[in-house]
Length: 454
Image (cartoon, rainbow, N blue to C red; front, top):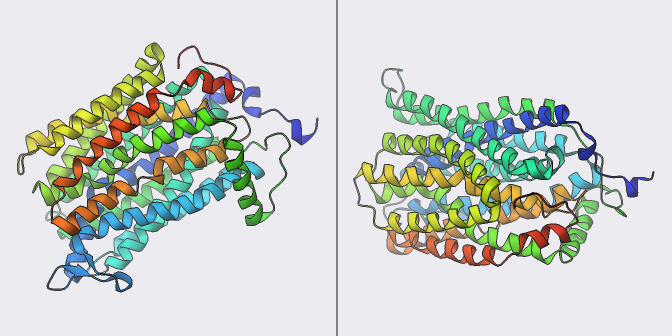
């Protein structure tokens, strides 16, 4: 049989081999989720803002590349810039991965680049806000690229009826590690005096340890997952970077053959912007707008992590009964109520912030996990990394807009509160767009077997 007609190998693997790979696959969530939790959600926003303020002029501005930026907006703008970089790189990496069949070396390279940049945040001190911005851009973009490759394994290691469960378990592993490391962070940060550390030194150790954790546990999936040298019928081997870009153009053209897959991506792009903005801006909103201290923020995010494990597993069970699409739609309705309540949160009241964190935790993991598993049914065989690069672009692609809106709001008004209500629009519009997608027909058009529930 020629390479052009080779069937994907994932369906040749027996149950024992699939379970072995699935267990290894879970551990990349376990490895990298600590970065998202400890670095992006908790520590880096307030800390980078304080570093920028130390370097600011009398009017509160810093001047990266000669551009006047209010110190309180630097973190949000940097998150937006990192996403733009990721969007430029992700399609190339996805195309090369599918053309060569070598996802694992690319996963290793992107994971360890991100882990090294995160570990380098230990040196973020004094007025080094430009170093912090650079390391954040590298780490965030590397994470996005690695997730393209990681997510592309899902349809190769799980049968159609297994994917909601496997995807939800991956998110649960991630939230478990995030909670575990946050407990350690809380001990170190709260007791920094007893450890002979300043507050800033404790924060920098927490930041750097996330990079060490990310790199160490990435070894598990790299040992368990295997490359599959499979490509779509009629494909040609890529020849370096140029071949990757040629494949990207072919992928974009090919995706027009699956308009329902594109419709799902559009819906996901819209509602996920709200999710990603909440994740990246929560600590800044809590500290700068609500006046909450770092210990309260750490405890609140820890509560999110613990409940997100139960939420991801619970929503995975709901999907087996009601289907992934209906379960996601229900979670979007809850997200809308959460954001509306968040707009009215009183400043200086940790109890109300904890209540909001608990509600977020119950829907956060499940809505993300089920979106990933639902999309895996809409991907043509042999094009997993290419299509998951498009998915990750939807995951990140408009996610620069929410942080940018927050940054502009602070730049213009000096308050983050006015920007939060705009996120309700993203969840509402995303709900409408997803409701209009006939997912069973989308699976059939992609040439995949229909699961019992979807």
